[in-house]
Structures are given as structure tokens and as C-alpha cells.
Amino acid sequence: MAYGIIHDQITAHLCVEYFTVVHPPIFHTQSPTVLAFCWGIAATVGIGAVFGSVLAEVSQSEGLPPYPILRLCRLIFVLLATTALAAFLAGLLGFELSRYSLISPPVAFAQLISPARHNRFMAVWFAHGASYLAGLTGGTFLILHIWNQRGRPRVLALFPRTKPAIIRALFLAALVALILFIRFARS
Image (cartoon, rainbow, N blue to C red; front, side):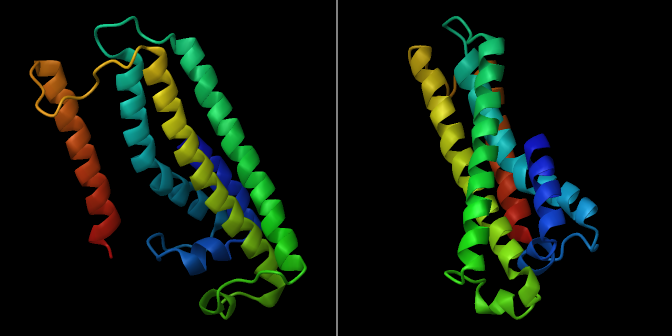
């Protein structure tokens, strides 16, 4: 969530319209700081909880020695830094492509955003897309990397047999259900 908040603080101050025009009006404010804080949490809490839970399972599950926590933290930091770099470079690309009129906001959005803000809007849009892509891809790679490093331990069973395994499975199922409810109940 910290990454999402920092990322959104930067992008909301570059182009608040990305949050006020493209996103549903869940948070009734025009403040870039408040919008960035709220959307930074809303956009990352679900996927962060799921990835974090799965990462905890593959790195600390029973049967094999746990993955060293300091190495795990270092890999997570590298993932977040790589995601930030991807967002930065994609933002620059989006800005430049828009500045040279090679791309433009979709018509529905362009009509609601001042033409003077189109370049910034495209920069923010590209930065967010790259951030999601790099984060999801990198998070998946990190989970698979650690799972392989630990000898591919059995993490989740279709029908868990031990009490901790049942609790983990119920927790993950409840987490996924909550994320889906929050995401689609407002639609």
C-alpha cells in the first residue's frame, strides 16, 4: 500500500483529472493529496493482501527451511524499485507521445479534460498501466522464484487436512471474496 500511496501522490499532483474523470466518484473530493491517499490504498490493498498471503505461504510454509526474511525483503524492495522505474519510464513515454500528437486521451475523457492537461493525463495513464503490469508480473515472478528456490513445497491443498492449512485456505477464500465484493458491488 505504501508504494500505491507514494505513486498516486506523484501522479495525482501531475494530473488530478486521472482520478476525477477516469475513476468512479467514490471519494468525494478534488484534493490531489486526499485522492492519492484513498486511491493508493484502494488500488493496492486487495492485490497486496493476496500476493502477500501467497508470498508468505511459499516462503514460510511447513516442511522446508523458511526463506530468509532479509533476502525476501530485499527482493520485495527490488520489485518495488523496478515497478517505480517502469512507471517513470512509461510516464515519460506517454507524455512524449502525447506531446508529439502520436496518442491522445480517449474522446470521452478528452472532452472532460482541458487540452492543456492532455499530455500530463497520458503520462499518468501510461505510468499507472506500467505500474500495474510490472507489479503483477514481478509479483508473480517473485512468488514462483521463491517457490522454486524452496523446492516447490506444497502450499495449498484442494482439501486441506491440518487445522493451520484449513485456516489459511479459509482466510484466502474470504480475502478473495471480499475483494470481489468490494470491486463489483459498486458497479
